Amino acid sequence: MTAKPKIAVYKMSSCAGCQLEILNLEHVLLDVINAVDLSYFVMARRDSEPGPYQIGLVEGAVTCGEEIEKLKQARKECETLVALGSCACYGGLPSIKNWTPQRVVESRVYENPAAIHSTTAYGIDYYVAVDAYLKGCPINKEELVEFIKSALLGAKPYLRPHSVCVECKLYENVCVAVSEDIPCMGPVTTAGCGALCPANHKACDGCRGPADDTNAKSLAQTFKEHGLNPGDIKRKFHKFAGMTPEFDKGADIL
Ligand code: SF4
Ligand code: SF4
Ligand code: SF4
Image 1 (cartoon, protein in one colour):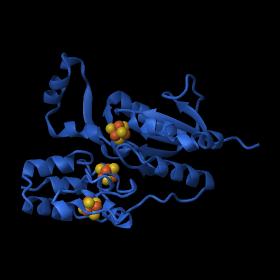
Image 2 (image 1 turned 90 degrees about the horizontal axis):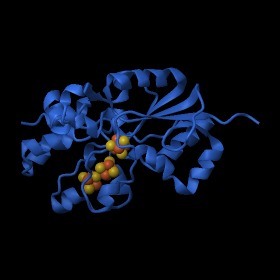
Image 3 (image 1 turned 180 degrees about the horizontal axis):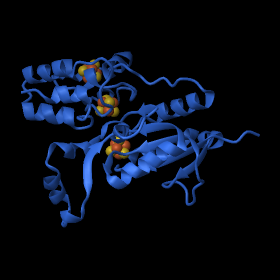
Image 4 (image 1 turned 45 degrees about the vertical axis):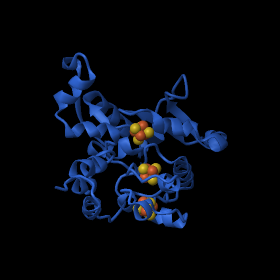
């Protein structure tokens, strides 16, 4: 019998919600465990098997020197390295701190900021080469399963390049932007969540980061014309993926 591919799950600065989604696979979790060996997964197992691993799933933004070293080690021991969730893809929610001076942020959170040695929050590809990006805050479970299946079959995974609006139309959702003038990030955000928020009558918040070939600047201009103030527009684009050049353009509205 051939050995099962070994998977490692690493955690950087994150809320652990994306790792939790692996355990939330419920109906297919046993199939996944039968197909792969979750060799290093601190949240799920007491012991760990040493590398090398076929796939490394890295959750979280990199926000300190210790994590940079841990990440470089992960890159060395994994054949395929995947950014798991928007924190790992772009900096995600931890990157909100990047727009305020470091010392100010630290003293808001810690009683003794002198003991803190954090850095600007970046996605993992700022430091190492990344083979695939599973976007979302948290990731979409089905997309993760699709990715694992493709990896097992040696096929290219289908990661959607288009925007949430496309999915929204496919599911025949009512557009909250058109029908109720609610500012929605869907036109510039990567699909793959099944247009989850608009399907529940909420605007997309941009958690999956920029889709391919989008025009964030134009959407920001539309938000402005519809009465959103520049501070709110900036916060919208900075919330999950402000470190990407595209969303930074949207945030640059005056
Ligand atoms: S992407 Fe969201 S859910 Fe995943 S670790 Fe980051 S904050 Fe948590
Ligand atoms: S609700 Fe948002 S995502 Fe859906 S079609 Fe309208 S703008 Fe696009
Ligand atoms: S609709 Fe937007 S905010 Fe909601 S889950 Fe999808 S990408 Fe994230």
